[in-house]
Length: 332
Image (cartoon, rainbow, N blue to C red; front, side, top):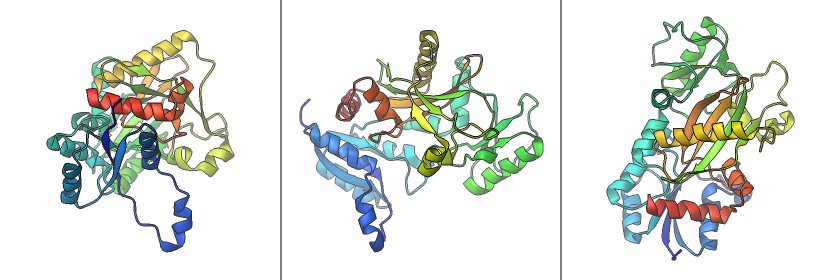
């Protein structure tokens, strides 16, 4: 590939306090790893954090006339419901960028819309109901306890805790009110599917390549603890180590089940309009039914995390992965 001028766009991070300077030097963010890979691939780069000064951002982009913008933003000023607006701005400026387009990000930011589209196309997803702010009843009779209550428009397990699993109407109403008050958004209530949790990374626009299936191994949790990817399970390294929680490549899935999982995930990726790269999160029930929990356009691609590890499992090292994302972005 020819040498490209690439702007790496990412969420602005708060200034470190002076006393934390030494610790801050040890932190490696995803943008640092992507830039290191781009440099190894021979591309020029410009770092551009997104802050409140949109005019300066536009001036920087237009002044550098990049061949591509590597988009790592997940929010605007901490509001992840504004993620699609960043790429809408890039569309208006007419510069190519990595990841999905605004319409896909808008669809996939709303779990209710996601699930309606999947259900319409025959993709299994847990039965659900959306409760707008201020509404806590009636609870549809079609919903069977236990239920899980999530914020409608969050990712990375934000707002999901052990007490998100509810087993009766009183607990359900309390949790819906909690989501309304603490996340200031509607609550998604869905049936809790007992089973194993898998993640399938996918690369591609029209020709799609599923990465090896990753399982979130929750078998180390004590009896009675809900087996869910709560915020603590996902991000608290000390807790993960204590409970033996880890991401693994399952070896006990037969070929037929793997094929079924991949087919469902590839269909979901296409139905939801994801481009370039993405990840589908599923649950496999005891009856081997595949339920899509949610889809993630522009998932976390840091080195050593699930997406990059799955690529490496099939022989795609990190630099090559970043190079593939660049190539796909230029052809989408």
